[in-house]
Every structure is written in structure tokens, then in C-alpha cells.
Length: 132
Image 1 (cartoon, rainbow, N blue to C red):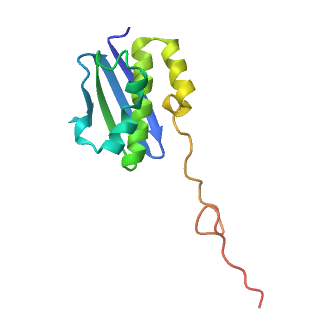
Image 2: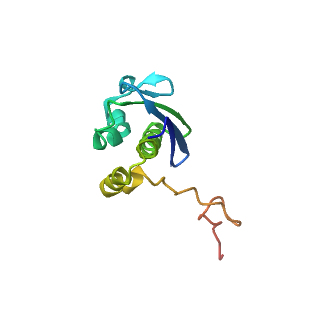
């Protein structure tokens, strides 16, 4: 086991970094206790802790999240916590459990905005042609 493990996660334009160290099971996101967040967002964020229940009461987790909306941040936090737990434990079995449950727990979302092209206002839209 590592003393402090770092994990990161991305979803759309949201980025989260998680720091895991030995402790009593305290989870803080942007310096706020996880209990301050609404339940449906909290459920997304603590999903890795439910799967890795062996570590849930033995580690303190500190997460910094920025960018995106609340759900994107929650999913980025979920990925960051899962990555940090795998790095902290150094356990391939745990990584395998996360991958079998949901691949997005370990692998960040790579989708990005399509770049704008010429002759139009956006990525796909083109100027209308008139034949009259």
C-alpha cells in the first residue's frame, strides 16, 4: 500500500483529482463533506466505495473537481476515486472488479466537442444554397 495515492477522472469538460490516504472513512469534495451533496449525485460519487467496501472505512478521500456541470463532475469524481483506490491498494483484483462492473470507473470519457469547419456556423451546419 502507498501512503498517499492520486487518481484523476474526466467527463466532458469536468476534471477531478482524488487523493486517498489512511483514515476513518471521511470523503470530502471541494473541501465539503459528501453528505452536503444531494442524494442522487452522492450515489454516483460513492459507487466505487460500495464496490470496494473493504477500503471504505479505512481511507480518507479528498477530491478537487472543476469544470462541467454537477452530473459531469460527479462522474469525473467517481472515476477519480476508483483510480485512486486502485493505486492505493495496488490490487489488480480491485481493478478487475471495477472493470467488470463498469468500464467508465477506470477509463475516463474521451468524447470531446467536434471542431468547427469552414463554410458553416458549427461542426456540421452549412450555409443554405438557393437555386433561384
